[in-house]
Image (tube, rainbow, N blue to C red):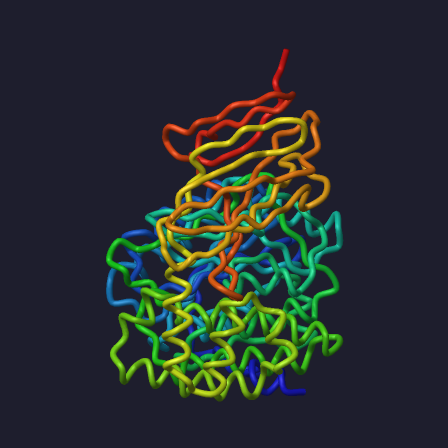
Length: 470
């Protein structure tokens, strides 16, 4: 199948590698093999290794396999020091391969654990991380476990996937993160002959991970506490922070899309996953500030590369499932219409301007509301009420007219109860709607009530209704 050709590298001789501490590890009883590619991270490396030494999983139940990929700093010496001190640490030294794929594959060939966990050499694990992940996987028969991830050193991490523990999520949800810092069944990897691409290519971990998601029987999220910290290096030397080449980066997205097409259980899942991939990895280029920062030459290269991708992998019907802004961009990109792209970016900039609720009066299930717009291009505001405690996603909704920098109107049908109600705004310019976002409150709002709910400004500066407690 196509996936095997894309990411399977086969078995390679590793006799040329000299493992430090290799005679100390045995396969019996090993639950987790931690795999670490290392290249010039001496500043951060001890912190990672110390976090592994501090694991509360019994030492005989996990092994650490670190591959020094030709480091020119003291990383190799630090690894040897830990391998000589701790019986479950192994180190291999090899010539620099230029990318993380080959050292990960070398370590995979040596791994003996029931599960493997891919760590980066500048990150940190919580003391209970390996135990919690392996117990969670074993209890629920999970092939891929997502640990709750947080950022350090200024690294931003999307929190959406990690809001609650879930022993079974879909590949469609899983594709929202393609980083390899996951606990994965080694049987899943070996039975499907999965390996990382070894050439220096962006998103090589995404190619590996999407294959795991689609071939796994079960994927779960362990989110009860922070388990893994992803670091942004102070010098900005993370591979993910390096400039992108439009053609090679788009080629990598295309390879991931080809894997999805080959391995998804049905066309519906394949289309939905490819659309999410495109939204996350392709359309990010067309964020207003980013795309306008590129030179005209670079803009044209992105449009050319992405046009080929869209025409091959995104059907017209599938694209209609995108939001108005994303759908519009996708169709302009399909036809290499840069004027159209820049036009919809201009509309997006208008729709992303701040909208503030200045006054609100609640009475008998109705909310009389008014506010200020910081954009002359917005002509209506859709406001929706949602119960913070759960239940229906939308309790009440109304479209309010906007003119001359102001909007006002009435939202009816708000149920009274014991839960806080939050409000979301979706601005529109003509037929194009923006994204829904929390409704911000002015700093000195005029709020009043004649009922059991009262408007208030949350600690984050947003507008909500809360029950009046007697």
